[in-house]
Each structure stands twice: as structure tokens, then as C-alpha cells.
Image (cartoon, rainbow, N blue to C red; front, top):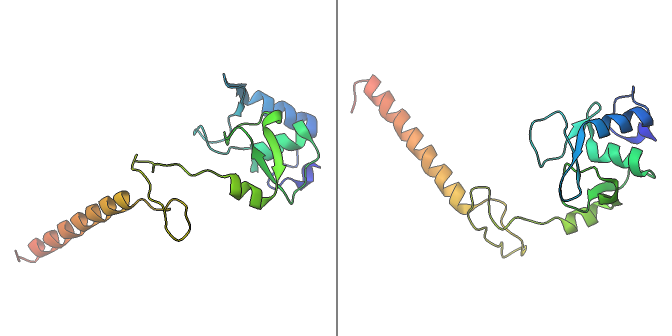
Length: 153
């Protein structure tokens, strides 16, 4: 069954992988079993035991009955959770359907609804406007510097 997990190190057995996952995880106050993968970031999907996703490897060794054609989803919404009661296998369409979008962008601006799809816009207009303003300022500074180098004003 471990051979069905993409990126998993071939040196692991089910027992050693179970021990490895439990060694690299801790329980939070809300009942999640959070794993610490190779990266320092918290709240994102983690990779362990080679290049395998931790939640998929945990489903294989802690729950069982893994079907590689289905996605492994966390019911708690924490991408780095490997608690067996929070893991389930669903179809790709179900995963996309239940995915939630944040009402604000990462800079705290309220997102706008796209009239064509009825979902939030992918790009925040306020952040895009600010990025374009910074880019224009950088370009203007480079042009001014080049003109000064040629003796023009």
C-alpha cells in the first residue's frame, strides 16, 4: 500500500512511517495532530519521509484503505493536520466544491465578487494598483538615473 503514495521514501515500512509521523507531530488544543515537515511554516501542507505529503502518508498508515484516485481532505481545515479522525478521502470535485475562499486578501483588503463566476476575484485590485504604482516609481527612477548618466535632465 505504501507504494501507491507518490514521493514516499522506499525505505519506510508502515510501522517506521507511523513512528516517524507521530515523532514529528504534536497535539493542539483544538484536537488536531499537527505535523512538522521539512519547512518552517505552520498552516500549510507539509512534506515528510521523502517528498510525500504528510496528510496522505498519515491516511495510509493511520486510517488505511487508501485509493490513489481520490484526494485526502482534512475536515478540520488545517492543512498540516494528520489526526486520523480529521482525514477523509473525497473526489477532486468535492475537494474543490468545499474549498472556502478568504473574504480578505493577505493584506487585509476586502475582496470583490467576480460577476461572471459569483466567486471572489483571484487578484485584489487594491494590491494590484499599489504594486503597479511601485513599479512605475521604480521605472521612473531608473529613467531619471539613466538620463543623469548621459548628462540630460
